[in-house]
Image 1: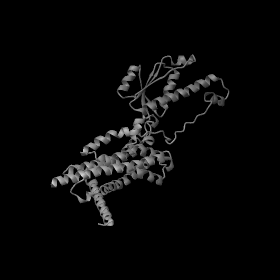
Image 2: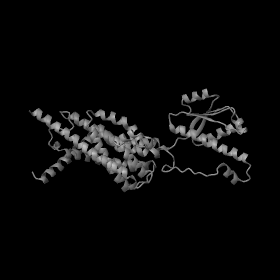
Image 3: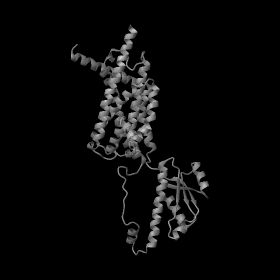
Image 4: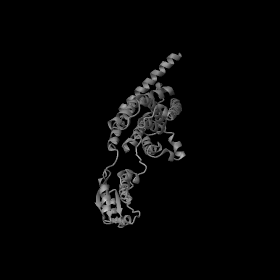
Length: 403
């Protein structure tokens, strides 16, 4: 047989394998859920929950043992802030702790009895802030509100004691150096704009790996010899045609899902969208390739359908932390950073956030692009090796059964 005919036969077999894999995606309810339903619905639900960006009107309890004009001013200004709602007053800390334990409030402001006396003696007064640390967003709102109000009251006291003659002197006296706080790349300072773009990229990888793993588990359960590659099908006689046919199926599905998650969902919820279309396309190509071949490599370890779910769902939260989004990359130990390099999501998340949220150009994310191309190449080679091993085992078992 000539080289042209062998090449033509390989293309026909790869197309046939692609068709069979596409039928599996459509007919298998588990694969269909992870390939289509979850990427469509889960990002919308997650984004809708965090669409408010920041928490507002966090309920707090006040223990005011001073009962003075200044303590009441502090309480009024805290209550007037958008982040805190003074919902309860308590006689002592024990009563306030009871309210926190019943989740009626998220924090406590404790104003001691000597609050006004210390200020009158030109001493530093103290207001204690107690917060439920179960949720960092509520802690941030309670603590920052107390700090802001105390600083503003301190300016007023400092101005009244300075003896200045003009408002300009008062302004210079309380703030010699004007500082303007400008949040970069996240103007609202919200959780959604900061973290959800990373979650969207992680959803792409996790659902893709889960769907491929379920498909591989189904193939093993369907084949008589329990192998990933059937021994009695001529089309599955070459490694490259198997890998290319299956990979093409997954790429076609996730080309659509990837465009939906990275371009449509952020627009639905007004998340930052600074990336140019071409830059985003050139970034997504190696990321999807790396995810596909990573998923195919992992699927070779899946004996039963349920195994991949236990594995990938378990690592979802650690992968989000290891990406350097919700925890500083510089504070991640070197060993864990090395482990994170095994997963395409690490570099995909970093590249996507820099392009889409920070307005970086493609040249600014070249290190991430190189790593993703390296991952795609390495996992492609590993996939071919493992599928080749599966193919040899299938042939051997087929020959033993015929003998």
